[in-house]
Image (cartoon, rainbow, N blue to C red; front, side, top):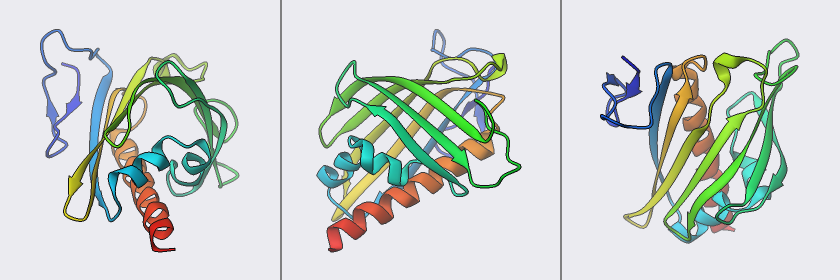
Length: 179
């Protein structure tokens, strides 16, 4: 049975009949409150310079090679480990991925299809990352659903990396709002 992470508790669940899940893939869902309006959060999702400042886990850094935030627009990003002995998915210490924006609804959501640039067949395949924004109190609830993640990417690492990136997004947007 393919693994799909439960949207609430992270436990494996059976994928929906006819769903886009294949054996060897899973879905991760993370959510976080950001003390800023949806418009400010969306701007950080749709700006390549901002993405380079927040969309990576601790112990890495991001380089945005290209970023065309419109439906059908392409992007390419490299994440490089800070630790010299670390091993990336693409080459050396680097994980490079590229993809296409499928949907951008200002202040509401960003849908991206992406895939690693790798020779490792276990890491290949198109993933979908859907980020939705909803009003929550005086701020925004940011929810990321990362679907089609290859089992070769440890689920706990994927979830932790997404949480770290969302924490960094919150710090960035909240600091810009405070200044």
